[in-house]
Length: 340
Image 1: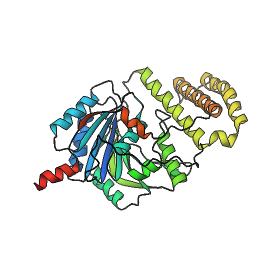
Image 2 (image 1 turned 90 degrees about the vertical axis):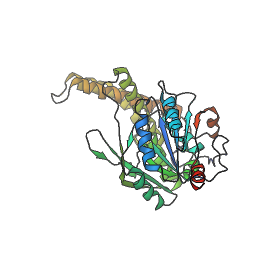
Image 3 (image 1 turned 30 degrees about the horizontal axis):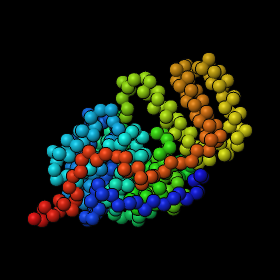
Image 4 (image 1 turned 120 degrees about the horizontal axis):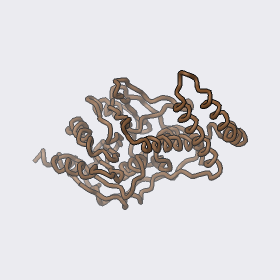
């Protein structure tokens, strides 16, 4: 399927786990997370400090963590009995894209706000984002910025002439997200958020609006992580970017198959020459890493051209496989208790 093809529409479904017979909140904040038991409390505290008086619910989706992430989220919810929060646990690890799709499927809000469990929303984040959302049409994707540990601030860049978003700091109409069939779950990491945004713009006519005052603190993976873990992340990222290239028919389609295969064969020789005669300004290890990444990318590009994989989009039936670790009162419950 090319980017211009329209996906199957999913209108959502009624879920017995979240009581849809009650008034729907305006915002559903979806928080995908994996192995963030040590920092998740900080994120939940920061989110609820900003949404406590808003018409919002929070949905934490634990991507089958190896640590106590789901337990920490459930304990936090128990300690805040008035919080409109649900905690779900995936049957197996699938990455942030399935978690974001599930968040949209079980949410009741008019707008979905996506943030990641390993980041930290900064003061003023929700107020700025909600103002942008309330002034935007339903065909808009609103995205904020990220603040890095060194204090620098980054806004999403363009890709192939189209604006992109930060998947961990964005808002979109729930019905629009469902109609676009959600995020492509084929790749674990690397590029599929960009694929969704470009597909949404080109196939469904959505636009992207930046919200400069809505910022999150982005926690970079620690450099103390095991080398094999960092290597695996990098290889997964390269694979994802290769899949994105294939899906958008950029490099492979423009150069043609013959050019791709020529690059695949000739690239090892070029890489070997660069590693053998490394400039003094760049360590040979860096050249080796770049060369390996390029070869992996070319391999996956060739593989995708041979196999022609189809995107794996949102599946409403996937909700049945998730376990609800906690169900809390919904915003309408809070309003009734306050009025009483």
